[in-house]
Image 1 (cartoon, rainbow, N blue to C red):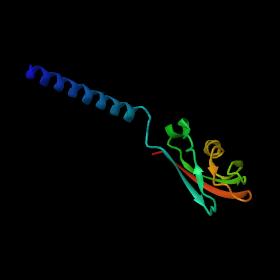
Image 2: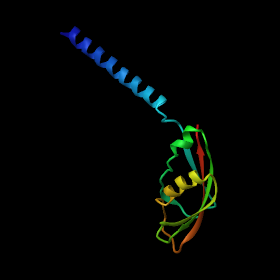
Image 3: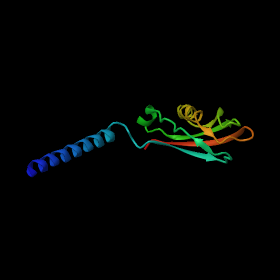
Image 4: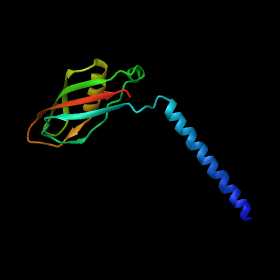
Length: 124
């Protein structure tokens, strides 16, 4: 009986290893790359309490197109982002960044403020 348990355990370990290897290969070759969008706040006086990372447009990822997007945000006293003005960057990346920062939430303050944000999209 001990031999039977040992064989079962070995078979289960092999199956788990095969599943892990299969998932690793799928991630490596499926386009799930290490593409990133790094957010850099510039001269910000208010702290972000909730942020959403921009979605890297698949078409630009596939073509390995990246770049830097600069945005000027109007943040209301309650911390909501009410307005986004592009200051530079690829228009497709600007659109992706704008969609994300409109979901951000800042710490409430006594009045509205303007915050400058830079988002670096890296296709590698």
